[in-house]
Length: 383
Image 1: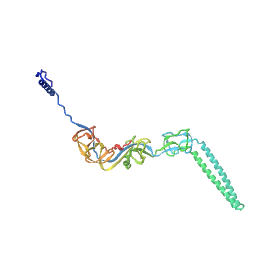
Image 2: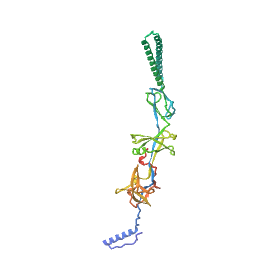
Image 3: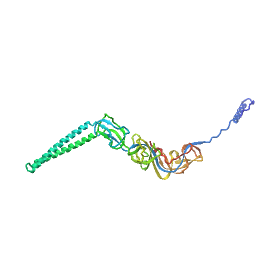
Image 4: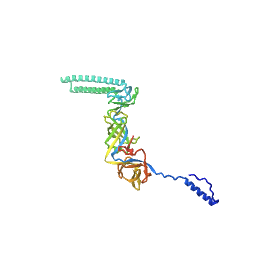
């Protein structure tokens, strides 16, 4: 609306000035548009309640490792002259992995053999003397004491032969220890020595892992150890083959937490049917346990506390209402609801402290987030 253009004549004085101000204010008020009222609609996050009989459902990522892994070393000291395997090599039982210089060991074996031959010669001489003195004793040409002395000399010579023979066998074994052989079928996972290096007896030089038995090693937070210890329905799937899930068995639970991660180490035995599982692969272990009665679970953020009462905001026709509920337990970051709500109802999970009864709300996202019965609680997941 435009202000009419015509001369205004007012009486001169205070009364005239006041009348002019009043007329101008009236004209300006007539020109302005009335403000539109906006409806207060709160954005919230919500879930649709679903009853589930899944009690424990958690997933953990781990690594495929061999159940048996041996650090092999020579049983005698010496200098390595040959290394015949590399990391990743598949070996068979009895295959030579490394060799020491056998020269000194062979000399020791020759010395032991010479000692054995000398002992056998002395024994043969003692036996010949014993036979002659037995004949003389039969003719009563020598006393019994002389015969007894010859028998003692023969027994002593025989004992020397036995000792020399044992020493020779031992030295022969020592010579054989110059070759380090694989005691099982497996794969070489580490090599700790090279040709030309002098090693002591028992020093680990090669690590061999058996490939017939594998397991998945993973860590579990301390608040989930007892709950998962009794779960029998355990499945494993490989990250390389997620479509195949095979049953597994928890073989070992560490009694002490890992000092670095503060988690407890679990070991799940893989079945032999999972032939594509290779050492070092990433695997996912899933724990599933069911309860006798289906349960309703809501996140901890869905609860609204007021005047010693616990309630949730239920969305109906775009508005919310406060519904009292009873909490019967906890499952990780979720709470088990005993009464007050029913499956299929929509419950607000974020923004509960900014609502009031009858408040209009707008649920964020293209569709409602639904509680998935097999979703793992955040506190129970691990990497």
